[in-house]
Length: 341
Picture 1 (cartoon, rainbow, N blue to C red):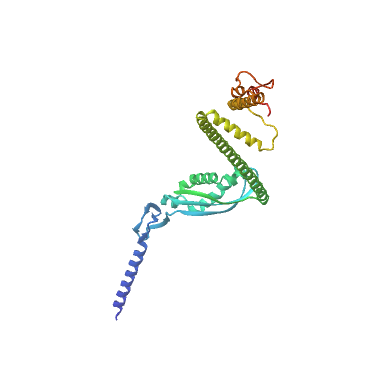
Picture 2 (picture 1 turned 120 degrees about the vertical axis):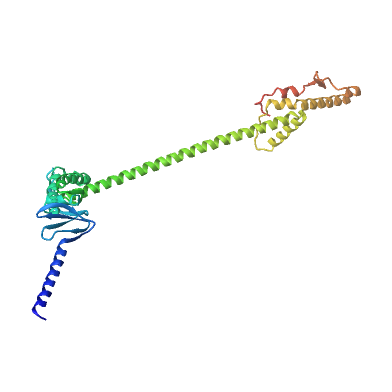
């Protein structure tokens, strides 16, 4: 191979290498979540992408910017609260780029700048709040931090989406006091819960007793009504039966009652007045029989058979051997309801 052929091959290789270098430096592939900020001779020409982007070799220079949401972890910061209590606070910041050109042109490193701004803003916000509010109002602190950081990062083309306080560490003395306060609060709640339980139980028992008393009273009332209705029906039945019973039957009933009383151990008996009126017919008939028997005995003793046949008048007292025999009916009929026999 002569010298001319060797030189030709070398020239071809150099041209191919130069084309490869030009192609490598002029062609960029930008992903969907990225933008390419192009500087031509040092002047920004805007953001390009996504897709295939062609640059002029040696003239254009591209800077890639990630548009995805990113987070910054702010380390523990020793903050002094408004009531001079030292606390350690750290947080997380979530942000994303809304303007790729400003994030490159306006600030050198927006992530580092946002982290430094978050540190100073966190100390400033916590310093204006008391310790109790720092421990209890995290959401309020998050909102204030996000608002203040967003005001600063807006000119950088960065949007602060949220700020989250991750941990607040108070001094050891404050932690011990908080533990004692928590124990006292739990004891108080336990006592209150127990008292409320006893009160509800007492109310439930009283309500049950009240309902039981109401049901018992209602049962007694219904029972009294039923007994009264039964007594009324019994009296009606007795009255209906008594209307068809004659005097002789009632007299026999009274005599049967006297026989039952006689079998008892009592020595005194109270006879109602109505009983004497019921026995009056029987006593009248018995008086007539006794008077007739006495007259017959007197006639036989005197030898006057006619006197033995004729009965004495019911209106005049009978005479036997010159003595008057009074009828027993009026004496028994006039006996009071409390007289004794």
